[in-house]
Amino acid sequence: MLGEQIKAWAEGPPLILQVRIDRKDIIRFAVATGAADQIHVDPGVARERGFADVVAPPLFYVTLRTGVFNLVPQRELHEEGTPLRDLPPIAFSQAMAGETTAELFKPFVAGDLVTCSRRVEDAFEKQGRSGTLTFVRFEYRYADLDDAPFVVEHFTRIFR
Image (cartoon, rainbow, N blue to C red; front, side):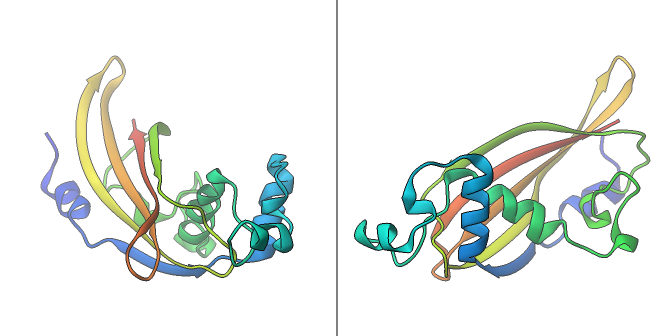
């Protein structure tokens, strides 16, 4: 059963940040991931297909999660590299990635202003062979200024 301290942490306010999607970042991601469609690197091709600028490949949102939410001063990082604000107030010796699911609604286009929010969706404990495991399920939501989503991701961290 979760303690009051972790319940209070889990029920805290969401973290909300904004970022403008940069053409160079999209092109860099497209080249690095081998995205072959010219819509990702050529603004002319993107415009011919009805977009204002280059279009990000589908998994581009991962760069937002790892960049927007994880770029903090070193003093705000746990020794294993996670921002302290993303860690439940419990003692743990290991943090692991769990299940991740994502709903993709529309593509990011260079120039888009994106509201990125992170909230704790759920936190619970299970008994494992090596002791208590704490599961924290985050919701990462990326939306435009009208709150229409680009992507909604559910990401679980497991703490032992």
